[in-house]
Image 1 (cartoon, helix red, strand yellow):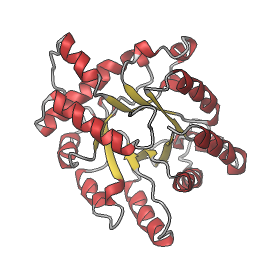
Image 2: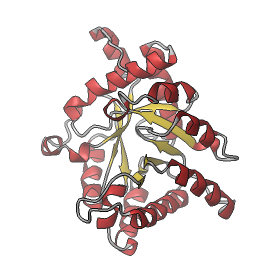
Image 3: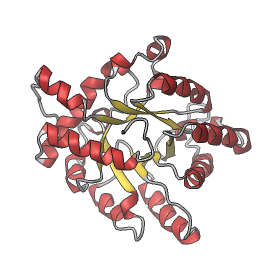
Length: 282
């Protein structure tokens, strides 16, 4: 699914003011880091996620330089969970980064039943659950949104979130972005109908992951207009604009919206998710 868009330079300029990339991996872009985080390479607002502790301090440097466009996400990716070690070694550091960076969120965190570790040759499920749980609880404590990786674990998380609310009735439940949403269209409705929590879930789509998935169009159509987000999920800043326009066109086609309507609506939704990011959304 890919809509061909012939966008004029003038229209691109107007769209750039509305675009928000809700998930990009620029801590993997060694050239961008070497170039001292050139903002001109990515002239839109974006949430840059981290995968491990080693990336957190680098992201803070980037945030210092790009204070008006970058939303930093600090976290440990499920693929890196088995390398993190005892939470006592990293959880305090993570909390420090999040507290000292007001515009920050928690991410990328989550669960992945499909990915076997290159180090052990198996899915490190128990460790993933431990690392995810610690980070989700921290997000609740600090009242921060989470940028969520979920592969073949939507049923598990569905049960986890319902149980979490029962066991923590007074606690803050973090807003959840399901990035590059790959669950079934029916699961969208299931999450939205969880009592007291449905309003907390947002669904983000990317070209790099969702393009070609037979369920994507239906999922996009089922997500309410006030819960849909767009992202690139890319590791190369130079490919960012091409990919954000591709997914913008895909959502526009699925929703029967114009490109500007799609950009405006997804930006409005991003503002809701990142409501504490006053330095970016003024």
